[in-house]
Length: 306
Image: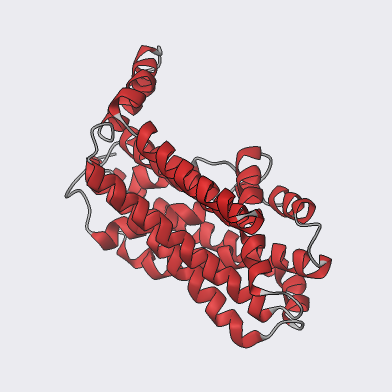
């Protein structure tokens, strides 16, 4: 088969993968619809549009953080819309069993960058976005406990961010990767090396995007507080912080696609001091909102594959 023929077949294969992933995510939403419908009957529906808009904006701002990282090490490889396609289709694929499909699709479809480069950018983005999520959740719970605790969490997070993201701190990790016998590890080290000398301004830019992401998420969960009878806005914001920790546990569990089930179980256990009906309902609503946002943005950017 000629190179042109192979690329033509790959084009159609990737299109089928996109369609299959979208269908699977919609299937997950459809399965949860009966529970979701029961919860909707209790809620003030006019606030749900605000909740969805907050989640949608947060998801797009997360892409801008990813784009800033990508352009830093691979400038000029893709336009914004093409990179958005690769990013949001990759986000859809996180709902498939296994954790590699999104990056594999990005590498195969966006072949102007190597697999190691895609893995490098995705790895840095995953570490930074997860760390900032846990940091923001700690700040929220800290201020809920005491003002001094909240300020300590804020200052401690900033200190860790700027101290650990330095060449002297990253060099041992890069050296370890290069000493591993696997060629892929050396390529990953080369991809990550582009971030070691990042300027303070660039670090602030990435942090700014990620903080905006979480401000939007907190606002969206505040909307749950306005929508759910008997739940205060402050309760909903604290539940957002608890849900974030639950999401992290689900993500690292590797038991199910995107932590499904594990996240909700941990959330219910940690939020036992809040109204049980609200906790159970928001566990479902939170997951369904994220699924719906992934579907909407995936569909919106599917046409920009080239």
